[in-house]
Amino acid sequence: MKNGILLFLALCLMIPGYSQYQKTDDRPKVGVVLSGGGAKGLAHIGALKVIEEAGIKVDYIGGTSMGAIIGALYASGYSAVELDSMFMETDFPELIQDDFPRSAKSFYEKDDTERYALTIPFNDFKIAFPQALSGGQKIYNQLVKLLYHVKDTEDFSELPIPFLCIATNIETGEEILLNQGFLPEAIMASGTFPSLFEPTVVDGQILIDGGVLNNYPVEEVRAMGADIMIGVDVQHGLRQRESLESASDILLQINNFRTVKDMSVKSAMTDIYIKPDMDDFTVIDFDQKETIINKGIEAALTEEEALKQLAGSQGMIPKIGSPISVSDSLVINRLVIEGDQGSSRGFIKGKLRFDLGETIAFEELHQGIGNLAATGNFKAIRYELTSNGLGEDLVLKLRENINKTYLRVGAHYDQLYKSAAMINITRKHFLANDDTASFDFILGDNVRYNMEYYIDKGRYWSIGVNSRLNDFSKDIDFDVIQSNFSVLENPNINTINLDVDDVTNQFYLQTDFREEFALRLGIEHKYLKYASETINDMGTLLNDPQQAEPAVFEKSHYYSSFGQLVLDTYDDKYYPTRGLYFDGDFHLYLFSSDFN
Image (cartoon, rainbow, N blue to C red):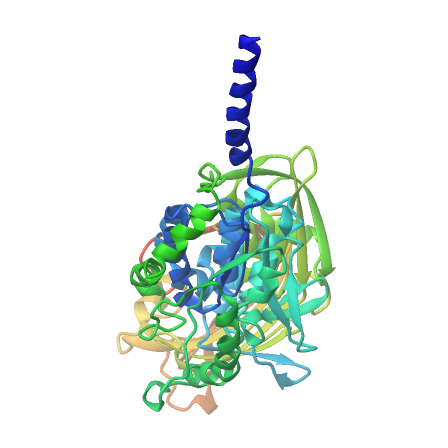
């Protein structure tokens, strides 16, 4: 009997402790909302560090623009400390500029575009202006890699922390709530700042930055089930006239008319409102990222007591999760192409330059996507990676660039051809989906032309046809003529003016390796004429050109087969700072119309 009483008392003592340990369903659910703000949004990282250190368990998170990007990374399992390290190592200007390296361009594109100072796209004989300064391709590539570990989570409520973000439908003006789909695509849409990045297409909707309509989605996050809302707001208030110095400043001020009014209501809906001091920063101040992150820490520390009280009401549940290991490689065993391609599957695979079913580095995937983007045939390229059991599906979502005609202009000078103005017309999809036709007309001291037609198949065998005219005059030593042609000696002649006409036509096959090494095999017809109006064909000076025929030293048609090897790893064609260049060719001349 005594033993039974002791056992009963022991159970009574254990039950309250057990109930307290399990009391997670009754604790307050905490939501975090992160506003948009470009570079200023880096302050969110500092605020999240303080929230973590206070011991708060975040149950829901949402944001807009930069707030969406940081919120999604946090929701996927990254800690605030990991985000700090990640963003401190990021070269933001490099990502935003979307300036693909020369190595991403094919040999044809390198040679055809680098000669000109200005390129003007045309569409139906009208000048076409780009939708934005950047396609955001490099940023998207980086987001796909960083969020690879949650690539198969289509419902954002199933992420380690349920997540949502806001975008704007530019066609209808509607606010779009994104809580499912491919996470990198969703947050890219939310952060598509107008005029800086091209609009993002998601499920047929053309989306831009959610900050246009809702830059602080506190109501939406609370509707997910949050009892307590923590908000981090990095938006500016209205600026004084002294600060409105540029077009971007004025556009942001106009947008802030609405957000300032909205925030007077939304800040009151936030239980713990964190407002970093962003008066000295702009949306593009990524070079001050460390200072901005520290501003977020400072602002959050002013609410430290409230954060610790909230953590206490939660039972001091720490953030659960181990460090995220960013994958360096993957296996893509199926390629799915969606959208208006305008290019053949062979062209696309040839540009990607990796084999299906083999392990490749993420860098190789990014290089392949960069090769496709560098062709200019597509708008910003979006893609998904999804598991299929044996590896990954690469789902390419391509949108054809409607601009297919380009006018290029430039100037040229050298010792041989002298000064010239260069005009080029380039037409893509001229006769076939993968082709490009280009015609250069050079006006100046020596008139020339260069016509090219190229069917690009990437690393597969491509087909090309070239025709060019070189015409120039040059003073040369008469000894050179005497040593190569049958001309009578004349001690009174030291130099003569030589006129050269060179018409070359080629048909060839070409294959490239990694956009750096090219092998070309083809056949060539060349017409050469060397003549001089300085002397006649007897080697006598022409005092009156109308009374005697000028000397013609060469006037022949040559037919040959040829091979060419080119290695080009220069970072810049005209002012290289690194790389190698080699160009070697071999001609087998088969016959001539008049061999001298």
